Image (cartoon, rainbow, N blue to C red; front, side, top):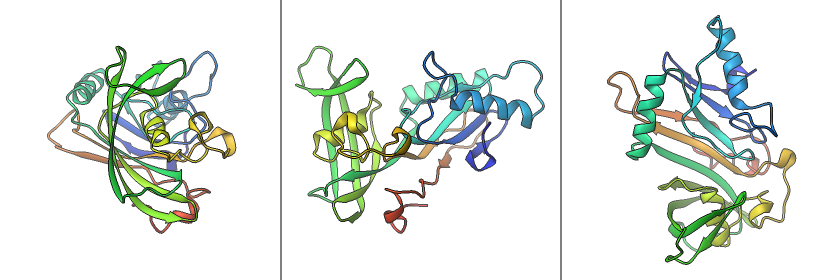
Length: 229
């Protein structure tokens, strides 16, 4: 079950959780334990729900990634949030600790990606299966041969941040699939979904900002003074 500290927001329509690295968002044949199953157990106990609990992930983050995951608690909320995502009314900001120091303090990365078996790769712009991928980043801090980046995700492609940063010569620490030479505990990588801003699906709240504190463990720890709050 979820710890209370992992709950970022809860109301009649939404549940936002700070997912730990190493846990899948939804159950699968390979992984029975998941954030969704833990969240359903928490809702069932917290609200004394009888029978099945309706809880659907509005978006997902990769197993080795930590950070904000948003669930809809009603079908109405799910439908409206899915529509908001299609309209690109949702803003997603990530933090990453990468190997290397970028040449520029701010940059925009644009690539064409294809999704192969459990991996993405950069291809030529005219590739028949290619999808345009765009992100922007700024450097929040540097230490030794590592940098802390704040990333604005402008498109939502499979493994987008991971493969684009690797292509730029800045692999995410711990991400051995995309070129990192380091391994972190539990197969984690130093990528964190820090902030999610959405239009609330019910009511007149124009913007709902959800922030997940970044991990306080290495390799994040040396950058504690540079982490946004």
